[in-house]
Image 1 (cartoon, rainbow, N blue to C red):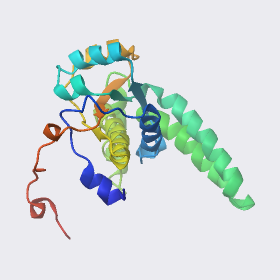
Image 2 (image 1 turned 60 degrees about the vertical axis):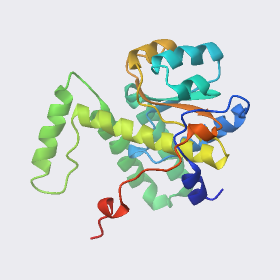
Image 3 (image 1 turned 180 degrees about the vertical axis):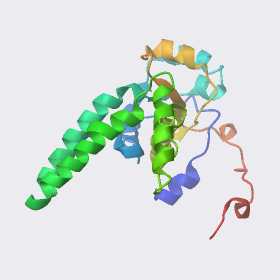
Amino acid sequence: MTVEEAILYRRSTREFDAEKEISTEKVKRCLELASLAPNSSNMQLWEFYHVTDKETMKSLTRACLDQNSMKTAKEVVVFVTRQDLFYRRSKEMLKLEYEDIERYSPEDRKEPRRKNRKRYYGFLMPFLYARFVGLLGVLRKIIASVVGLFQPMTREVSEEEIYAVVHKSCALAAQNFMIAMAGQGYDTCPLEGFDSKMVKKILDLPYGSSVNMIIPCGIRTEAGVRRTQLRVPFEEVYKRI
């Protein structure tokens, strides 16, 4: 499919065909494509749990309030945010940036670029993503307000706002995944109705993680998709300036 065809094909599927299997390797490949999604500062604070074990899927179904898309799914993917990995990711990204500078930068630009990346991933990102009972967020808000008096400044820097940024980035990866799955002729259904505490226990997720979205996968039945994709008129949401 073209990208447009995949987007038009993708629908939230409430029931999957019990007789039709999907390829685990193709689902994995779609997750590799999900990892290429744009994300804030390229921190990639996410993990993808590809669940194929039937007993685990059964437990997740209960945690997802016994929704029919979970009951009939062939496989399930759980998208998880890992803001707690901010320090490790900062170090990994700094290393990759240094390697990229070494490969592609002219000799006279290498050192200035290394210093720039060192400030960004060595100091700014750890400072921005760190959490401490809300206090670091208050400090960041104060700094942003002062700097904002003199120049444009990102204002959404509280701990709650950065938490939202991490989830937005993970949701972009989930969308990449669903479009990639549609391109394979596979169906998905993004779920936000679930008991997150139960899901974390089932998957043995660490304390600092957060469940972003659960996506059951399979091939649709005719009854699994509403005939009409209901949307408000495009003119209500399209604003040209």
